[in-house]
Amino acid sequence: MANWEEGLRKAILAGVGAAAATAEKGHELLHELVQKGESTVEEGKVRNEELKRDLKERVKEHVTIAVSPQDGDALLRCVDSMTRKQRDELRKRLDELDKETPADAPDSPDGGE
Image (spheres, rainbow, N blue to C red):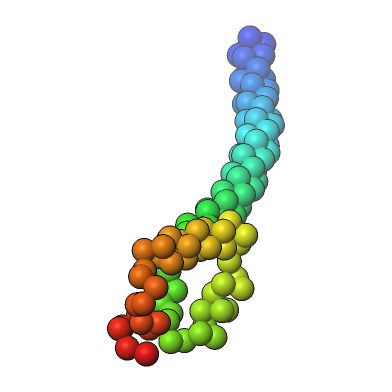
């Protein structure tokens, strides 16, 4: 009977050891998963900020503001918000238009004054 009792004792201790090891590994795994989750959230925040910045830049590059030539104040506000590079490009384009337009052409774009 001593063998039977010793086997039962070992089986119980093995079960307790397995439970303790499982709890320990579970805590380690939980800690690792929390760390991975936190880093993923942080990476997501950084990526989200990058996407917002890229979107703003692309919108700035590709969206034109509809301003009629007769609305001088709105046109000046647009020029005020332009970067130096954009203003340089505008000057270049205006110079090109001045060269293309005959001196005796009417001042208004629709042909009238």
